[in-house]
Length: 506
Image 1 (cartoon, helix red, strand yellow):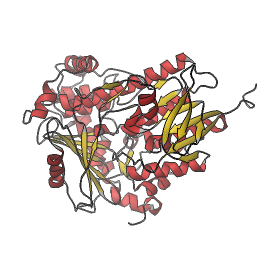
Image 2 (cartoon, one colour):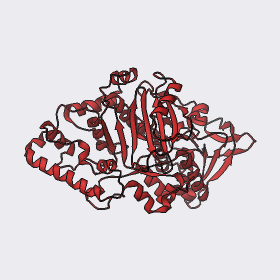
Image 3 (cartoon, helix red, strand yellow):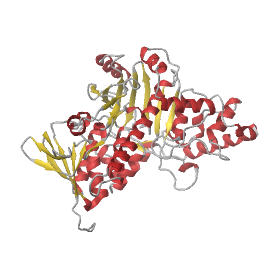
């Protein structure tokens, strides 16, 4: 049978939150008539997510769905995001920005941070962020899309800060418009083939049966199919990432100036976020229940938040970790059903998007090949493990000893994979190289140096350059950055220039 005559694969998605509708819309758009997509959701099950910040990868996903940026931003009350401002993580009173952009430029095959380390050793360097266009724009509260040339103004990317409770419904409308069939109802039974163990259908409370060839479990932490029915084990990472609660509380904006970045401020038992949206400020305290009670955490976020509260704090509970396998039989888990780390670097939506991308790349045209399933699991595990290590670094690379929580994370034993990365940095100022995945050199450099983890040595080739010439070159770079940034519009002004981006006043 030719491809044009082949029957489309029947994909059934369980769960209608962010991950479910991203999956359904992504498959419907990118697989076309090779699939039919049915999504089962219940209005009785609420949306868990409060994560309102994203990574730059979301832009490409939205574009591939044929959605304009203005339409997306208007529907989700979005603002632009250039990075994250980390405060009090390495030491109380110190801060740094992890930018969606680079620091300086490589010279002669040697990374810029090595030259910065050489100048710093000689007492001739300014703060590392002074040499990043992205950091300078963020600190100045300015925004414009990156240039499409090779200039300094092309050396960064951006993401969005948006209302997570609006994103799922927006993706629902997008999915329905391109052929996804929605079924309202609660799943009471998962029917399986007695011989293969594959899932054959989902049975709903009213007796309906939704049959499929491939099932995508987006049912959140419940993991109704992969976890409950197939019994795929959960690998718990709370011993490395002890934060397991979030107290979220929205507020009115305290000022008219909307920052183009997320703020993460370390707290005695975790950290708190500030995420500026068009219509409000998102606030939350991500904390470890082993070190502080929920009532105390709610009191803490009330005291720390700026602006008039729009609601009382809402506590969400989670367990950092992942399934040992995210694809088993004919079931693939995406989103919280697959794994969750914590909100620190805004990775939750990225990890869902990543799994959708790998599923499309390895999509079974006929019978599921074990090699494809194994490759999917390898790629997903690699992504989760790398993100896990990066998040642990934020806690472990600290000198803080002012609370039990910080004493615990500072002194804990970290995974061997992270210990190896940190040793490579300590010994030579080098970053482990990899071509796939999330968080490349600039991200690790921002956290290492931002939190005071200075390497013992750096590339000796930097010593071949006259230090005064090197200082003059970096001074020129800093001056060029400041001049270019001063010509950018304020973030709020840029948002208002195109009213199609702006949500209707509430």
